[in-house]
Image (cartoon, rainbow, N blue to C red):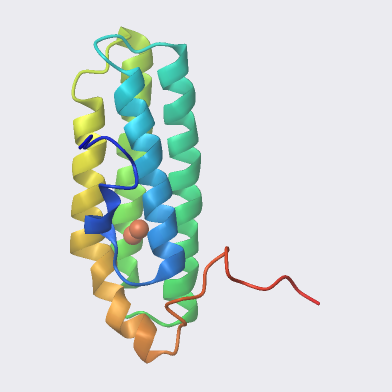
Length: 147
Ligand SMILES: [Fe+2]
Ligand SMILES: [Fe+2]
């Protein structure tokens, strides 16, 4: 079994809210592509994937932050601050990789923060979101387009 296949790993990241899970899986899938394109050299292809990962991460964080605000999640401030720190670290890491053209520790760092953040922060809002009536099964795939 190939442990690098995107659909096999992210299950551990699932928190039970379909839309957020699908975004986490998308980030994980991009990370898997990044792992495959960075061996010891950080090249153009890797940088393009990392750029996409940065964009998708920002979008994902914005979605979570909107939900936390709309649903009055009490610990939103600390969570948002963590998002800021992670985005900052990701940008710095990308710059460093571009400057030195090495991907030393890049993917393992991203993998660790993704798993740690989901487990230590994202899991914290699940109960609150469900109490507030969020539909855990609603997702961009199943949502009906506006009439
Ligand atoms: Fe988060
Ligand atoms: Fe998240």
